[in-house]
Amino acid sequence: MPELPEVETVVRGLRGPLVGRTFTGVTITWPNSIRTSILELQSRLPGQRIEKITRRGKYLQFHLSEGDMLFLHLKMTGDLLVEPEDEPLNPHVRTIFDLDNGHQLRFKDPRKFGRVYLVDNADKVVGKLGPEPLPDDFTLDDFKVLFRRRSGRLKPLLLNQEFIAGVGNIYADESSFIAKIDPRRTVDTLIDAELERLYYAIRQALNAGITHKGASLDAVYRGGEFQNHFQVYGRTGEPCLNCGATIQRIVLGGRSTHFCPVCQT
DNA sequence: CTAAAATCCTGGTGGC
DNA sequence: TGCCACCAGGATTTTA
Image (tube, rainbow, N blue to C red; front, side, top):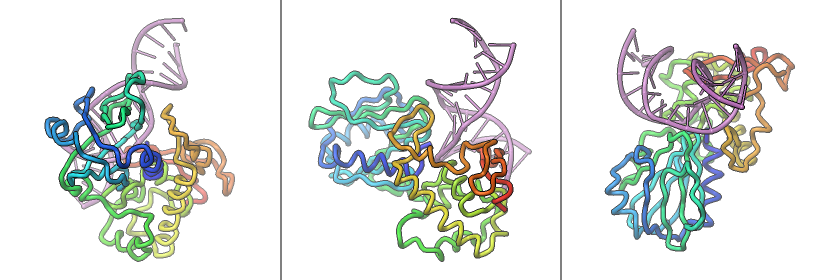
């Protein structure tokens, strides 16, 4: 469930211990998580220094000294640890990256959904992603343009990474609630005022998540506490914080969806 | 085109 | 207490 705010929090925490370090080796304990050539990963990564670490959507991007890019996607349960190489290994660690200072970057992922990519061109991994919703140069007008010639319901569209990058199930529900829009609405019926509310709601929800260092759910502890500030997500049967009506849970686009049937129209 | 379902996965949970 | 069915979901793939 790491979404944009959770990944951003992880990225910020890794810059201090990792930027400037050089990879010296890779050990793979779950090969399916490597989505590019394992041989190339093991031959090309060692010797490359980490120049900077950034985020694109829900991907972590390691910019490497030879021009390659290492991408990590945490998917549902992934987490990244920086630990001394003599520290006992958690049994859910799937990939181990050796560093030049006796530490290791360990990709821990109980459910094995996480992904690793090493590419010479970032577009091979993130080329089709939609725009980042938070930068100042992503304007309300840019947002409105995204809806042209779009159809279907709102919720699945918000989850579509080629539409907007970084929004997942939690922040899609929170954003729709803040914007007071029913997630079942077909998007070609949304009027300008609603798109404006949604634009600000998405940014508000994501920024609130970042402020609280993301949400810690599912026994996956990252230190964030945004889960204590959810307005609708996971609050099925509880009263709406706005009007007191009972928060409903439905399945939309195959995903659990939480909303207030009174506030959200 | 949209939409739904299946797929990958395992820890946690609820029922009996 | 133990067993088991079932659910969670990001992204992709398949089917309708």
